[in-house]
Amino acid sequence: MKLIYAIVFSFFLMCCQKKGSNNCEDIQNIYVSYNGPVTIGDSLKIYTQEVGGYRIYSWRGPDNFMSQQPRNTIFDVQLKNEGWYYLTLSNNECDTKVDSIYADVKLQQGIPSCSVPNNNCTFNNLANDSYYSIQKRYDPTYGFLNLECIGTNDLDIFFHDYWKTHEPEDGIYKTTNIPSFTLDKNYNKVFISTIKSSIYFKTYEGQTVYVSHVNGKLQVRFCNLSMAGTNNSFNYVTAASGNLTQQ
Image (tube, rainbow, N blue to C red; front, side, top):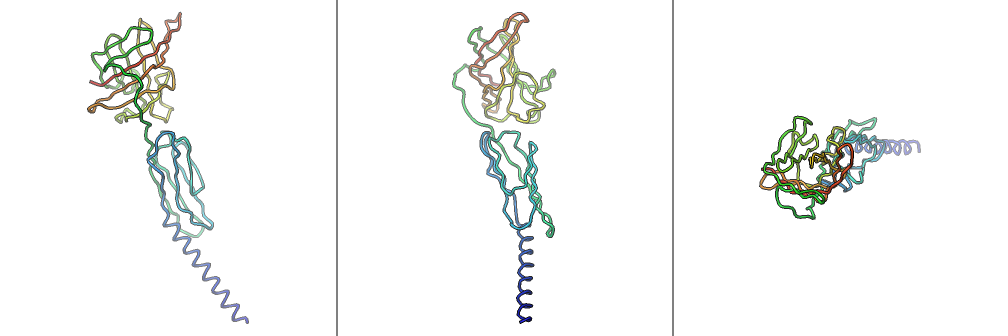
């Protein structure tokens, strides 16, 4: 009887050892995946295989992303969530496995609802402007990429810092109300300003601007863009619609 118990116990140990060996093999065979590319507003899923047993998943990624789960979902994804996601998988018996993946987040697409002649800007309560020169350049005052529109009255479109070293991607951008983007990791942002009747007008925050390219030239369009200005005595508001293409 003792011999039978010894044989059964030995078989049990062999099974346990084999299971541990398989667990190590499973750890080494995992890889990181995601459901992308995704578009702003979608759910971003970053995941890997479940290996079972004692194990530690350790994730890190953009926007201070951290997790200890094999499967993860980021709802309402933004550009700040784009980038490299790193996974370290380990236990106390096997070699650590490290893998990573770059999650690509695309800009939302759309077309403006208004129709404005090219290189013109219309205002609901001010005279309209046309531009004889529209150039893409780096503005020395703010240090941003600028679509500089020179004409009846000048108009400037400043792009987020990210676009200093990248050509702006086609898609929907949002306006800011100050020419500063440094702390904003969502780089689909622009700031628009103009001077009308000696009054400096600038965009309100969170409005929609459409960026695209025509024959390789940068184009910016918008409809009924609310802008505010002051002459230190009175406050003024206007709504601007524009169609501006780099020359």
